[in-house]
Length: 228
Length: 401
Image (tube, rainbow over all chains, first blue to last red; front, side, top):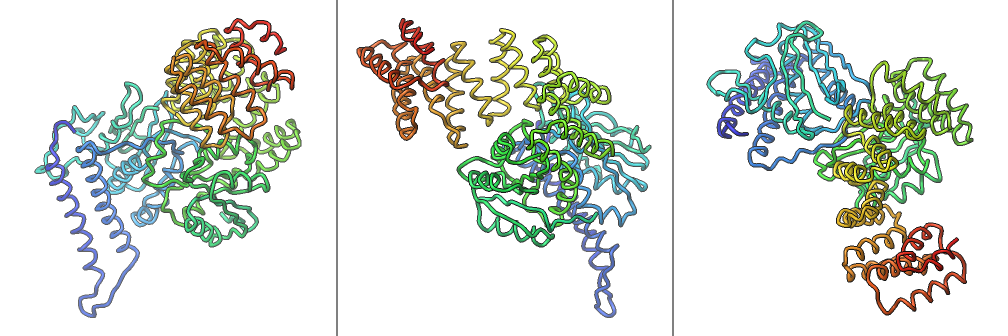
């Protein structure tokens, strides 16, 4: 948290959260028939609400973590984790939302792959990334994980149009461009992911994230790499 | 997938009564009929001794005694839960007590509180079909029929199940412990050829160590650590090979790094304490003994031998007052232990060996009296002999046989 001041983060978070809540309120309005006052709720409305409510929740989790990191209060809780389970939990919790968007999701990970990591935070990164991927993919997502030479590579791939060129490559906190609350989509999510990646270190190796467009499904690939 | 949970025997372990009730209710709701409960690790081990469980649902935090991880390791080491038992560890979302960057013995699944019965069912649905077929393997092993166990594993492997890796690992370990090192080696190399994994490299290292090929063993262990640094068995193997190769100082450095990663393993702390003692690195030894003693106490596996050796470390550091206190503690904590006269004497001789005093005559007399009553406990012979020789009592050392 070197070159960023917390009030900027706060402003961005409030902005994101306000937008998501606006969508929630909009969807809620659509549930009531203005003439009769009756509630006409269907699955697509619920899935929409779920999606926006998740974004609000993600934002608040992020905000709290960034606040703690900024104040030096955040202690990473690195523990053993069965990676497949973490991915499966995520998948089970989000299946209704993905079904609604007509998106299929595959998990590609050995069932016995175990890694030392901060499960709550890595799950928050996944949540963050996949909530975005759902918006940009055409119809499928692949979540993969493997041990490559002492690094856990966690990939989220899609078959959408891919990331804009300016976003590609490895990102570190030190090299990242400062956040700019005026420029619309604000990059706070990626900043959060980078921070969580870097909190995972082993000797002189730090975790990182990498964005590319050479995913196996033809679209974008978000990669979280954590040292063992 | 439908899953017949009705006939599965289940044990719930949690120190909070209402959490036990909640877990039991959840299990009953998803169709389990037979649910036993335990509030502490010791009670859980008792129940596992009395009955084979298909499913164990255990909270990580169990209050004052062993935690869930130590319970799992103890139960596996004592053969109380076999390969066919599904062990699920329940952890709190904000559990700071589980902070460790290490991969030791892993449960079959984790559940993070709070969780729903649907997630519990999902975990069981994935784990049980993998584990249940292994009960036949357990049965064969209980009858000491290793060949049958391996044959059963081959049958299971033929169907190319999702948990092939786990089955191959089990097969390789059975082959190795059954004395078929060459077959275990072939299997590990096959696994390595498709994809390097830490367990196969570690087992190859242990095989090489057994064959007295230290250079090769070291290479395997180091490769395993490079591939999965948190895999603790590889660190333990590396320390063992370095020590066997006479590179004790490097072994010590390896163990110091390993306990830094994972401090809660009693065998590892004991190994470090003894090695540091041997190398006269008494600060490291003292720290390791203190941790080992507190772990042993927590796990109700304390032994007078640990206290006697700890006394030697304190005496060697010149901390006589602490050493005296350690002897007192030994005598008090093990006052009902039949071996305690020998162990307190051993501890006192350790002090005498670095801090000569007028009690020498009476201690040696006590030695002679005790010896007339019968030989010392086997575990004490090495400590006694070394310390008697330091005292110049070669004749008495010789009487130990």
